[in-house]
Image (cartoon, rainbow, N blue to C red):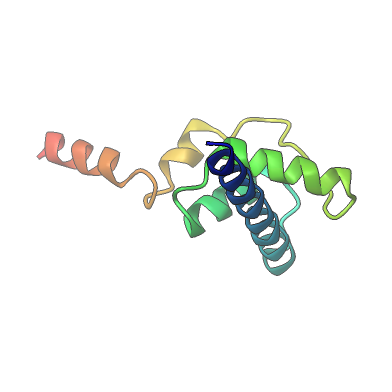
Length: 100
């Protein structure tokens, strides 16, 4: 049983390191400077990443001074979120179907 727990900890550690590398890559390639933008970009790359995992990895990177990302002061507007057709495709499909 202890070896299963050790394997889980190692797997979690490996996953955390992988997420950190992904963050560094995305931040440098796309010149991202906001946490929210990093989260969106990473979740587009890997839909299985949770927001919490990404935030935790960013926090670890910031503690080691590897990245410096700012938090968005203002939440994105409702209309700006609706304009993201890729994320909101089911919503728009329902609206169009209802209107038709």
